Image 1 (spheres, rainbow, N blue to C red):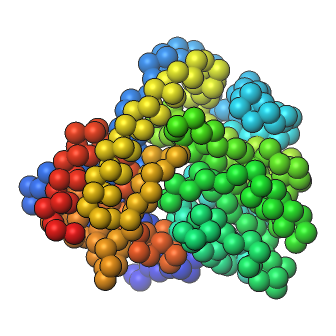
Image 2 (image 1 turned 90 degrees about the horizontal axis):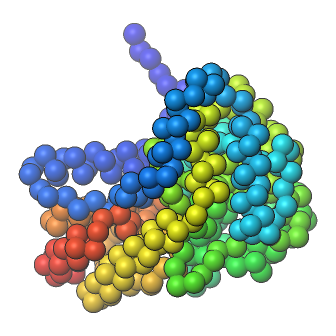
Length: 388
């Protein structure tokens, strides 16, 4: 029997991190000691007070039933309170906040609510692959907005084609940015909101990394600017902030119609986030944030080791002020894929090719600060032995 997958799946590129895992496992099978700086998965454990909250909640039989599709009322209230404290944004919890099974889930499901077949979705390039993949699965047409170094890895809004803007249904932005670690200011967000209102474009803001910042920097939220809640929805995650990637908990906030549309899709696809995990999430958001500051201090130290090491090798790299990624230019005459393969096969160091995040990522690789300083220094030393 010949079983063919749906055309929508055939249109999808291979998922970047799945392919990286395959290559890494091949090299490891040869007995190579791998230093994995590829996937952005925190290496530190979830803080104990959050684990204790989960343990207590899981003992309560009331958490063992189906959860509410839109999330616990208390979790949504706490998320709204957190936005007020962090960004001075007022939200209506039961209308403008929804619980997610991690922000990836919400980002992937959102196009199903608002993108019709043939609709144009403006996606950044380079970018988290889910933006493009979820657009394809919804039948939309992803059109890349290149992020260039000369523009601070922000899309050049002034240069965007007016005819394209008239066709666009959705624009995706992500700051602090994965993979470039670039940051956006409120002035940029104001221009995005104005452009979106003029052309009736829905703005999807992925804000998963706002709490991973250094040197006193505090990344803003798109929701802080006038008009943002008229046109946009913002996705947030507890995954990286609190080392909870496997817990699958996040939330989205913003325009009530956009939140409701996402909720309608979720009600057909999933049964909500486990109540016990939401209760642990409440603890994460309401307890002392010292654990976040401590993690940022840890990443800042790692950043110094890797950035100084790469710069010492003559590679083009800037010190990021947010995220736990380092965006590094590849040596002249090499592609990002070839360079990554060289690092893996000859030095046992896993990185991520920039082109895997979109065509505009060519010429760069991404390193994740997910090993300790000693291993980062070892990675630099191994790269030095390659004579880059």
